[in-house]
Length: 313
Image (cartoon, rainbow, N blue to C red; front, side, top):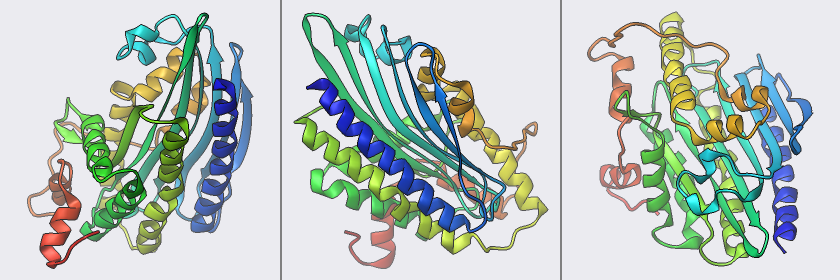
């Protein structure tokens, strides 16, 4: 039964990769995704798809992987030591988009499924995933739209699901050494196995299927915005924070490297260009300084409701 579940999820994820690439390529309008299939010596492989130097995306990737092995790596058992020593299958789709225009936010997402097995014991399975948004010149209405789509995706699964996974996202994508969030949040969930497989799988599909609805309208609003060299330099500086998070804090990056995954695919999430500047401080009152107010956990939908005097569903 466990591997029937694996096959079911794998079929969905391969289709999701197709749909994400089709939608993102249409939005880009110039470039298409190039495919690179790879095998993992220890077991498994994947299908990486990358878009570069397009009309919108300076670099982006949508990667599918299915890896398996005789022993879960430490990054997967740190929070669940009872799973140490089990064999595993891990299947997922992960994506990250780095637009060239500083006014189009970077975005990341993934959906994944694990099975951990041990002779004589029932298999343990769980889902994880989510998506988050990293603007450099944030627009309040964009952030509200992003979170409204996320809340709508969560709504059929319980009244508190969005608020719990929104809070988890704020907590997870937090750069402790910078005392700021990576962006304006979204959804993050892990170790999801409460209820039946069908219920949990339905939630994973709702998250994966809602990403384009959340992201593409924001891309369309801003992909033709004018930008100058100052804004480009600020974008590259802020991309440095993205790199710092992925290399210092991200569990997915650590799992990929510890499990012997393909390094090129794991580090696909890195931007093509980034910069660091010592003790940089934006000029007070500048557009760049506005970003600071967005890099803290906020109840975006409640703020929108109070600002507009109407209920945000």
